[in-house]
Length: 342
Ligand code: CP3
Image (cartoon, rainbow, N blue to C red; front, side):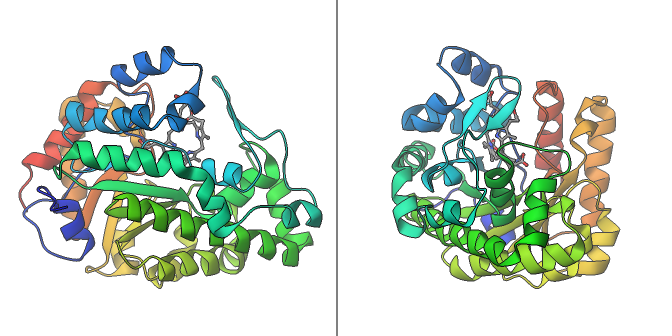
């Protein structure tokens, strides 16, 4: 389908544009009153994720309300462990929990992987089809998956963690097993992303949310090779790699065959440009907490960031928008970008 506002795709392909595109990680969610009221009428988070027309509705909410340059399909990275055989629960006000986790070689052997696992996620592909159909080519739809290391850490820990010491322990004590698990997650993620692309997403983002807990050597050994496989396997659309906290691995990430590198808010634009060069397409990276500041401050900081990245830049925050961010401030951020001219 021809996309009317394809600013995001043009920048991802390395083209120069009149202004940068803008979208926000976690734009489809609790910042929007429409989301909160729909969510309150349902049995829980999973009902929303698993009901394609509702997931599509929530994906479209920020398009109407904020006027962003891209939609992201409403889902969660945790559908992958579930499709592989480890169901998750989303506990209100607490977050994800896995009743069963990976503890042994046998647990890894028992996992479903690749196409068989991707086959389990029909509700996601259906939600993508409905969303693309309803967007009518207005803007691109972003598909996403968790990076293998981030998915690995949930499968081993069973929930979020401050240290991820159980997951990291496995890397140090049982490296061969860790590679087996990483390989299964990667094979599944590749099939899953291909199916999402077939269903209609125009670009994909891989979230390595827990990259920053690994040592540089662990990241190089256990994360980079699998990200590389994903980047090499996904050729039909541009790939954005967002590895939060992985400033120490910037050189390795720069070598990945991905169209765009996502930057977190700890990375100063000039440092990123110094390491990546002026032509590398980057995404980010205003501190999400900046959106608690005044409108004037948000406008000034956003413009300053755009000037510092100096092109080949997709505007976003340095991580997901926090649920209690005033909606007016999110709009100020988006509108500042839309009014900007290089
Ligand atoms: O707008 C979007 O970005 C699309 C939707 C989206 C969600 N999760 C919906 C969601 C995306 C891209 C994700 C990715 C995701 N999920 C990541 C990677 C991005 C990141 O933030 O680092 C991670 C680590 C998860 C796992 C996850 N899902 C956690 C830790 C939690 C609980 C914490 C929280 O934010 O509440 C979730 C739940 C979740 N996923 C919510 C939403 C809107 C909140 C659930 C609710 O409605 O109660």
